[in-house]
Length: 440
Image (cartoon, rainbow, N blue to C red; front, side):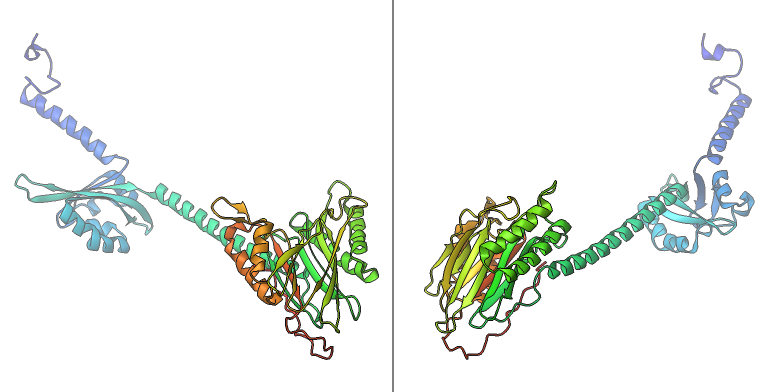
């Protein structure tokens, strides 16, 4: 059967009478109007001058306004806040005229009670059959949830930034405290020694942790001076406590009996008794005694080593070699260890260099190889005959050249007889030897 032969009104409007067609069209328009009016977003149609010609119930509800107070009486910009109106006139409207549509612009509409609603606005110009602009259709999406999310995100970012700044401030205070504590573990000034020059340097690998390297120089009596340099196990507060104990034990032991082996043996007894439990602690160290001879201008040196890298002797004639101390055991590990001794004499222009293993264990080159003892000896040989402060200055530059390859603390101590030293005991003493604070 054809559709024209069906009984009843044609639901598609085909083959029916005009009354039926009109009724069905009205039903469709009512349905479309209802969808338009109750849409989840706001709709508004304006004439080209901005006068509102049509607005849906959703947007009226947001604004708290009656339809009759809006349609034909207000312009679209009257719905916006002052800032929104300014932006619309200077940016939104010009772009819309040029492009014909614009979308996703964040604005704010004002409600009848004075409050505001953030919205995302999209507008499209509708043209007539001859291309003339007829009206503007605008869609507004409620952005309150998005605004709340953005505000929460901003709040979290501000909190994170505040926490970051607080952490930086705390870290700075911690570094200041660590620097002060590190400095307290080193001598603030070294004594004047007639006929000798002294220079030191201390490099701290990280400002966030305490180092375990140490050195000292002090008088034993009117004719002899004691010195030591070493490295304790570990890092941080426990290493600092061990460093403090080691320094003061060596000083006290040397004043009681300055023999280098006896002094290291006393330190070994103290450390072994204190740390022989579940948390063994130990150190490497060189302890020595200087005895200048005012008649010859030379200085006799006697040392004992407990597992420490050998000292270097830089001669005035340009030669440089290690002062061997093989076989000396770590201090604090065994109850009765053997410590190795050595002796030499420093003539005018000669220097003795002590160092910790941070410098020899630095990583260098593209293959990150250890710098090593031989490379250090070759570098030091290039400065043989130079005064101690010149040697230390050169080594400081070497340490800087390692960059991030230097990941351990390094202590340097150079003792030398001035090249122009004479046997005249009445000659004025050299200026006090400066100490270099920990470098960060």
